[in-house]
Image (cartoon, rainbow, N blue to C red):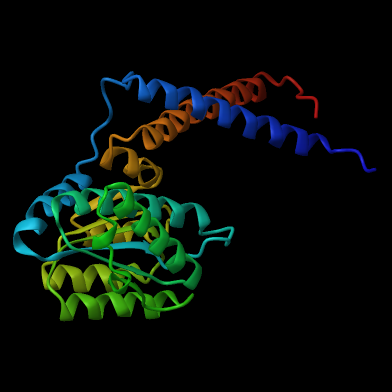
Length: 258
């Protein structure tokens, strides 16, 4: 039997530590021991206001996790973040009666989006209100075609708001520009340097980089997203401290054994 490499052992230790931290923070969240202060994300206020208005106007809130796919190394993390944010909005919408219209640009992400939204309605106790027809697969692994589909959606249906959090590239310029012309309040979040300038210029509310991973916790007070957010904060702090230590070691000229 081949010996387990040191890299594999290190990865297993990191995964174990993450699991332990998440469970501990989940217990803290269940006990109501949440942080008293969190940096505000004003972009999400647009979504909250849209949820309040949607129940009265009957106009739908559009949710999109982007054109990325689950399973792709470059887009999985952002797509999952978008799916989780969409689930939280769907839960709130099911409670106050605001209509939801969701779209995706990949078949795998589409199935995941349908499952996430169905579970959100079921957990809220309104499973009968979930309509699979409101979750649309606009394109498959063609970002430009997906952006064109969203633009067409903006043109034929009046929306209360559009939440675009997930994997986006340069095709976002088409979505953002058409949305601005149609007067659709857009909340967008991405992580790539290709899309962020376009998001910043055309969206009404912007989530930059790591903020998209915190969106689900800001949109919900459930213990699970709060635990994930607190775990992310600790891991981010640890990484920053390690980088500073390594920088100081490099400046001092101390050799690092590999």
